[in-house]
Amino acid sequence: MKTLEILILIGSVLHFLTLVAAALVPGKLNWKEELARLGPFLRSMFWVYGAFIFLTILSLGLVTAVNFRELAAGSTLSRSVCAFITVFWGLRLIVQFFVFDASEYLTNWFYKAGYHGLTVTFIYQVAVFGYCAFAPGIN
Image (cartoon, rainbow, N blue to C red; front, side, top):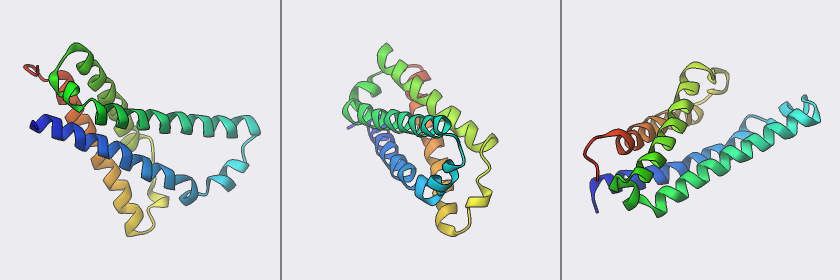
């Protein structure tokens, strides 16, 4: 197995681990109580958006797990998929640094480690899939 294929497989696993973290968020951030303050439409919209993001990340994990060799091969389609993954996680990384202020929730070492672990995961995804999408000479 080629190094790039292994890096893509690691990226796939990181997609699934991100979902584990995402599944913990509603309980840890007390969404039931917090979202109860919203009107029914906004509350359901929030849950629908969350479900779509969850399904997108699940799909990215499945696509990368099943097609890691093709993604490493450098075809136009594989570069396009990798570019999408790069943009997806790159924008999420920007949000992590410049929009979200999670400091009030980082109350113990576990939450801090999880938050920083997610940041490292986003950086990894951008680096690996960005390389697959934009590096010259991959084929």
